[in-house]
Image 1 (cartoon, rainbow, N blue to C red):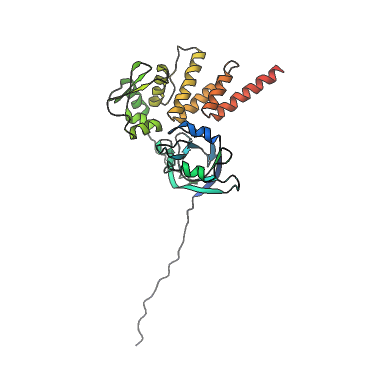
Image 2: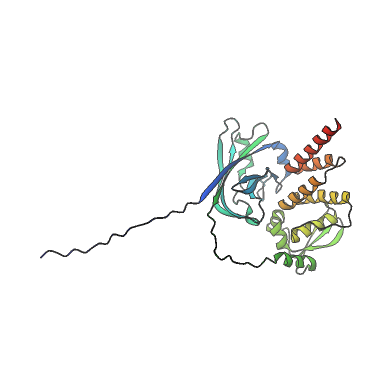
Length: 326
């Protein structure tokens, strides 16, 4: 008798593949005056000009004195686009100026950047030990060239047949109440001898990498008090207002000249405390109010704090004024 043979059913197979689209772009940050930038000290940075990749704006933050690591130079990729959430990766390299060849220093795998504390690419505080960097030959002619390759992963958009209605956020109202009531405030400030400024450690740290660094280093303790002598009280009040409200105070009782002075001082404060959006807002406000008697002072401020767009607007204003005089 022949052995029975099991019957095998062969099924048709269909395979579908979903491959995310990627957009990649390289940005070169040419840092001139390396020796002068090195004098800025720790936790102070200079920014590259903004550049677009995949429909989002980015820039590079370079800390010549290191960020929390004073023996190193620190480099971070930052997402500038507000209210954005994007998956991206980046490669950070330094360029040999003689050969033009880039040497990879840090590779950040794909991660989600969003417009909060996760807008920075991590693990680059120890970008390069300063002594090794200067001995390596990558600093030539008092210049350092950093190359950043950003890859943005673009996913297909899912179209809902029945869109979900999401209630509007009321977080700004809660922060406004917190700002006005000062309930639970755990740190105080004395600004040029004036007392009465108080805030919440977690809110400050959430909004400013500099305050976050102070908190991590234990410089801001509960019931602590800071003394600030480099800033006018009304400027510091405007800074606190922005930190909680995400907008500038109205300042209705000030004339145009005084508003401009406050805005210039606020730009300096934003740069000092690494609050990038506030810095951009101040830049825009100053660009809109340029006058013949203020443009030189504004240009000096823009160059001091590496405000590329404001600097360009000042130079364009000066050039147009000269043309009108011909």
